[in-house]
Image (cartoon, rainbow, N blue to C red; front, top):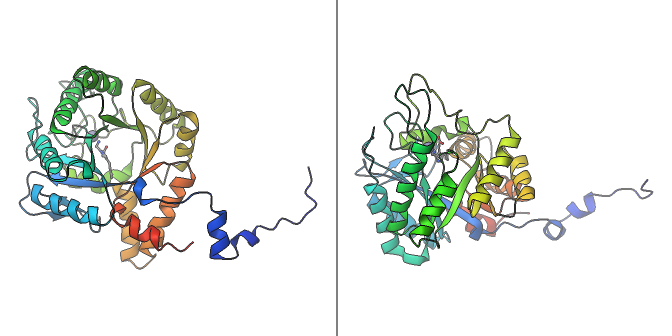
Length: 330
Ligand code: PBG
Ligand code: ZN
C-alpha cells in the first residue's frame, strides 16, 4: 500500500523529551552483572592488561571492591576464581570454595553471586576440560563429570548461580540433576549457551592464565561455536533451556546482536549479553587514544544489546551503570 503522507521521522528525534518518550527500551542498572577475578597466586591485586579499572583481585581486595560496588548500586556479580596451581589430574576446587564462602559470609543475600564454572584456569594445558592421552580431543563426558563435581562444590560453598562456560554437551542436564538430587534446587544455572569461538577473550585469558598451549589442539574450535554458524548458537541455546538452564547467554555480545535477537525469539528464558574482555578493551583503548568518549560509548553498546532483546547485561563497566544511566543524555 502506498503512503500518501510524507514520512516524517525527525519529529520524534527533535528534542530530548520526545526522544525519551519514543525510545523503545530503557536501561536499568538492576539488570547488570559485574564480573570479578580473584587469583590465588597474588598477594596484592594486579591490573589486567588492556582492561582499564579491572583487576585480578586477592581475597581481601575483592571484599573491598564488592563493598564499593554495592555502594554504587551493583548487587549482582559473576566470579572467576583463578587457582594458584594448575592440574593434570586430581583436581581440587578449594580456592573457589573459600572465595565464595568469604564473599557470602561477608555480604549474605545483599549480593547475588554467580560463579563461572570451567576448567581452563585449572588445567595445565589451558583447555576447558579433560583431554585424551595424545591431547588431540577434549573428552566430553569426563569433562562433564568433573564439572558436575565442581558445581556441587560451588553449591556447598553458598553460590547463588552456576554459570558453565565450557561448552561440552550435556553439562547443563548433568549439573541440574545433581543439584536437585542434593536439594540445591534453589540454585540457578546461567548457561553460556551461545558462546562463540572468539578472538575477543584475549585479555580474559591473560588474566586467568587460560590460553590453550597444546601442540595438537591449538584453539577451542572443537567445543566453542563457529562465528559462521547461527544455527548452532540457536540449537545449543534451545537445548540448554530444555536441559534446565534458567538464563541463556550470548557472547561476545555486541558482535552478535542478531544472535541475541534470534535466541530471544526462539526461547522464553531471560537472555544475558556478555560484553567480553576484548570488547571492553576495544572501547577503553579507543578512549585512551582519544578516539571516543567513554561513558556514551558504553551506554550506546548497552542500548544496542538491549534493543536486540537482551534482558541482562554482563559488563566490566557495570559498576558505573547506575551513575551513567542516571545522567544519560537521550
Ligand atoms: C572460560 C571463560 C572465558 C570467558 C568467560 N569464561 C574464556 C574462554 O572461553 O576462553 C570470556 C570472558 C571475557 O573475555 O570477558 N571458559
Ligand atoms: Zn574455559
